[in-house]
Length: 239
Image 1 (tube, helix red, strand yellow):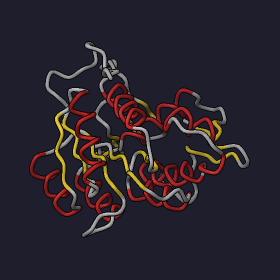
Image 2: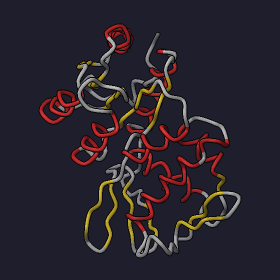
Image 3: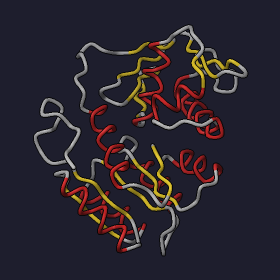
């Protein structure tokens, strides 16, 4: 396998990936594949140790198993997200139920992969995240939504003088809606273009992300004026 990151987009130092997975064979296979892709890899089989490793050593992306021996992945994700709002988190789960995926996204996960999975697919998703994170962005690129200014490259918005961090996929959602401002964008299209997945059964995940984003952008999230629901279709951004 070869990395999909181009030389123009690749950072000067190796990107560090933290794997939190208690099944040794899976952890070893992931570690070998990612090291082959020239990533630096940290591994642990325990959630609390993973939280400590992220805090003390840092990481550019976290691969997090849902079922861990000491603490479940949802709790790990929530704690990591509270202290590291921008670091992408990919959740691994043996469960295929939609409710588990939605709960993972609500906890702060940026993406999820259901076991058994293809290592090649996971590596491709990781590379896609890094391509988006390190793609060239004009210095003056900023997105205005009402009285809020979103700075995609900095992964934050400014509202009434207060800076609020945005996760990777929150930034991507703002980008997509802003590119189509004034037009309805379907939930299915949002899923496909941002998460790279398809399927009507998973569109509730989009709704949960919109709820979180509204709390950061809207004056009154319960009565949104900018991220407007188009019933039966999806969402429309009103600038």
